[in-house]
Amino acid sequence: MEESMEEEEMLTYEAMMDDQNHNNWEAAADSFRQPPPAPPLPPPPPPRPSPSIPDPGRELPGGQLLAVHAGSMERKGPKEGLAMGPPPLPEPNGVIMMLKSCDAAAAVAKTAPAPTPSSTININTSTSKFLMNVITIEDYKSTYWPKLDGAIDQLLTQSPGDYIPISYEQIYSCVYKCVCQQHSEQMYSDLIKKITSHLERVSKELQASPPDLYIERFNIALGQYMGALQSIVPLFIYMNKFYIETKLNRDLKDDLIKLFTEHVAEKHIYSLMPLLLEAQSTPFQVTPSTMANIVKGLYTLRPEWVQMAPTLFSKFIPNILPPAVESELSEYAAQDQKLQRELIQNGFTRGDQSRKRAGDELAYNSPSACASSRGYR
Image 1 (cartoon, rainbow, N blue to C red):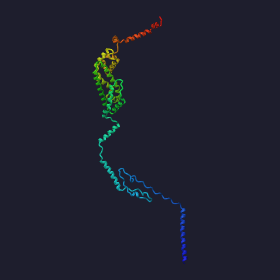
Image 2 (image 1 turned 30 degrees about the vertical axis):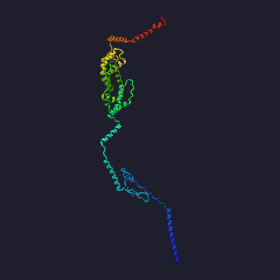
Image 3 (image 1 turned 135 degrees about the horizontal axis):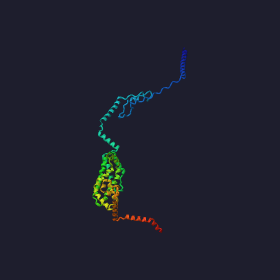
Image 4 (image 1 turned 120 degrees about the vertical axis):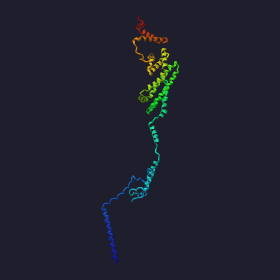
């Protein structure tokens, strides 16, 4: 009985093993018959932090660090290092710290003293002066006019033909800048005062001159001043164009010539004219060039002075006397004869020698003279 029971148990165990193996074989066969399952999807990427939420550890403009909950950095997903959803908002104490820092900055700004209007104006004035190169009246008096004053001194006292070591470009540049900075009126006034002072000094020197040197010194003063105007007027041409001609309706050269007339010529004309008439009656007492310069200069200064000595002026300036008429030819001839006699009395016989040489040449070139020189009769 026991042996039959053991055989039945063995058969039952083998039958169970056969069923299990059969089931395993059927599952394996089904796996080969069915398509393989799809691979698992990759885990989603971690979400980016919101722009409105600053990154942990990032320094804010106010100098405070935003407090972030430490647990947000320690939350991990199924795999180590993957964040589980967006990070949580900062704790209220971090927000409070940030607001406090902002309030402190605002309080410091309120307590700072506001700039006064005077300081603001000074800053703007200095800036505009630097940008615009503004020339104040103090700059003009201390820097620009001294340069012009020195140059005018040299030009007024130079002798004809002298070299003056000044920079005409620099002087013209000073005049140009002063005119552009609205200092034309002051510069014109200073120029007139400067030249007036010089002419008054010249007039006093002429008054102290002896009669035998009076004409020559007057000629030197007149020539020196007119020569200086040829340099002074071009240097101040910008002032002349945009101030004197525009606002005063005058010309700089005419104004400066008028200064010499008023301060020198008018004071000496009644002493000078008798000496000129006396020198005219005595040939070569005064050189012809000196006489011509003075007479032409006086006519330039004031043409009305011709009436004081029309005959004297007519010898150097054309069309002073009225045109000649036939009834006065004998009078003209008498004046010429008188002049010739005076020249002969002073030993001037050049005209006679010239006529004699001219007569000899005419005699030599005549046909009779040529025939006699060749032996023809």
